[in-house]
Image (cartoon, rainbow, N blue to C red; front, side, top):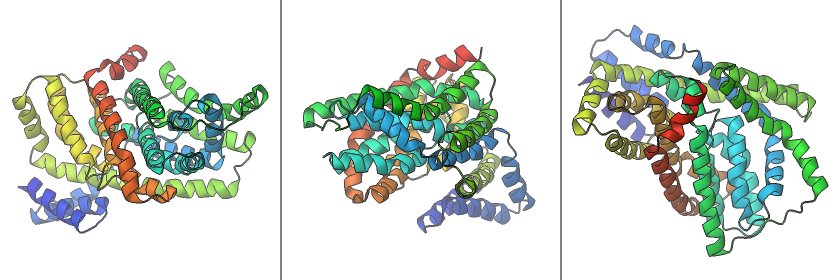
Length: 426
């Protein structure tokens, strides 16, 4: 009864236009008050949910990404990858995918990738004659790599919620992110031949390529150091985040020489604002999840799923449908925090590897960023690219199909997610 009341209040508040954190917090608080539960629980559960060492990685990864942006790394990466693959037909499509793949090793968030790279990519493609629909679609689809390839803020949040190793989960995202990139590049190849996409006009000489490689090398080394440290067992997720911040400050000061007290302060301020939003959602989602737990919703959901089927692949299909639907109306982080305690126990009982499930959950919800009405990538690309929203949505459709194909591959080949962490963390 409490869970039903909380859910109804939450949906009503969402429909009235309240922010999702406020809707969750007010719904949980109202139910706790109405059913005469101790009001101290509101503060206790909210604060305790943030008392987590893995969560320390979230603000540090965000801070590192802000500093890298300040240092102008995005433009250096984009220029270097243009020289590598730009002169292939449809080259800027490949450049967009590879730039997001490399930059995702710095940012860890889809919207951060779009904010840092989107305007550069869309402007360049528009200059070379690409349709705005293609430019918007490939930019949004490639941004899904950020939350899958380490470091990943959604994977850290999922690991905290599901109580599994964040390092193991981030290592699990490496091969699936390469699968996604491969599927998207195959689509660009097909579109390039069907529609005659342009060839990049970039001029490449041996000396200019070597010079640009040297300029971009410190940025390229950031994900190498991060992933290498985790694979070697030297770094946990929090330590990796701290090392990334230090590395970003050092190359910002001494290599690119664009970091000063002013933009350092602006990066810190941007980090505080971003973290306040994320951690508030984490806190109130834990409170809402506690209300659901009082009614034993996770246990009942697990029993219901096991009752439907004991085949893990059948349950994964059901989970995919539920998560894709949830992604159309919920932002990824609240969806992770609310749905993980409900769907994870049943799938774990059926034999689905917790690490594999984490990758499947996050990828589903990243696809939700491209779907209305809540898909934030749609609105962000429309804003930064000055493209009408209906054209952005039209551009998203073919790439959503490719992402669902990648999702099916990742879902039905669990070894893509489990092989590397099992190899590294025996």
